[in-house]
Amino acid sequence: MSDHALAEGLAGLASRVDSLSQLAEGSDKEALQADAERLTKLLLVAIARNMDATNAQYQDAVNQVAAATGAIVATDKKIQKVADTIAMVAKALDVAEKVLKKAAGV
Amino acid sequence: MTSPRLVLTRGLMLVALVAVFAGCGAALPTGRFDALAAASKGVENKTRETDADIVKLTRRFMIFTAQAPYKDTSFKPEIDGMDFDFGPRLAPRLAALDVLASYTQALAAFARKDYQGDLDQATQSLGGSVTHLAGHPTVSEDAKKSAGVLATVVNELGRAYIERMRRAELKKAMSKAQPGIEGIVKFVTAINRDGALAVETMRKGIITKANALKPSDGMAKLQLNEAVEAVIVDTTIILAELTQESAAVEAIGPAHAEVRDSLDKDDRTSLEKLKALVAEVKRLQGALSSLK
Image (cartoon, rainbow over all chains, first blue to last red; front, side, top):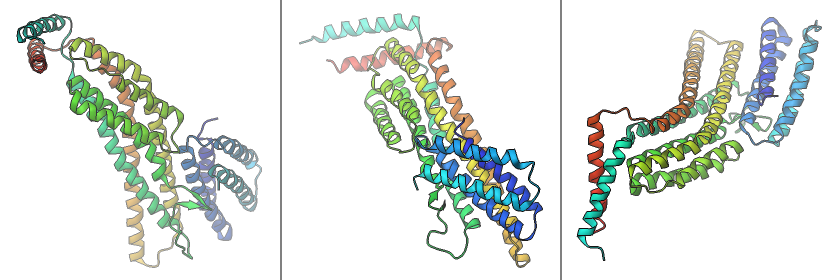
């Protein structure tokens, strides 16, 4: 697994959320826009962590986020409702944030 | 005590030896070493400017995305205590480029026989650069090792007054240094790629945020347009610079190998060879006069 797996996974997810937010309306749109912003910042944290070449915890983080992102991709085709998608994105963000915090030592 | 006559005899013998060696090989291609050193320093300087632009872009990203109510930390590049301040993360790459520049300057000084001035200065500068690089908490072990290889190679350079010996020293040193150069280049280009990804991410983030804004009037719309246009232009330039800098630093390895290989060739004209021979003889004469 490459050192960029975490950043690439988050970038893919950010792109998906951004596209969805443009189609959504009302409170769903706002929720997805907030998620997109949070994702962008988490992605920047992941890129910055990637530059910390000696961070030993990073690989563990990469593996966990890749698994979470993979789960979202696998179930993506079955998702019918925007609300379900938002819940799934939020869950993935929580996982990403948790592992990034671990990697960052926060 | 050595008599002046004996010194002169020894001097003439050395001049004769130089003439023999000149038949075997030409003067060192100092211009190529200087060009390699100048190119390495140029990449370092340009990268320093690009890094400053990335830090400025991060500030601009925070201006677009910070949320009210404001706190004194609202514009710090962080989320939930995790920072994405790229300044410190880019610094080891600059330190690695500084190692490369100091190493090539040391080679150029050695090729020019400037042992007392430039070589001493470049050797000290290289030592400082390697220590500086190793002191960064985020530098990789491979980059540290690569920098160490370059420092060791330069420390092992002897003070060869005969050109043939200097040529052999350079060839040996440059062959040993080649993997170190490649290690530094790999480290630098990997961070350039991450830097480019960060720039693209911030650009997308700013555009997304701008699309969600609702300017109150025509003037506010115009100001928003100008701000977004500046981000698009600046990020396009930064991305182009990072690509160019990676291409330039990747060219240093092959150029280093080519300069080393050129030590085996002699593609200069007879006049150049003669001039070099005369200059070498004069230099040796100067060295000998100090022995009297």
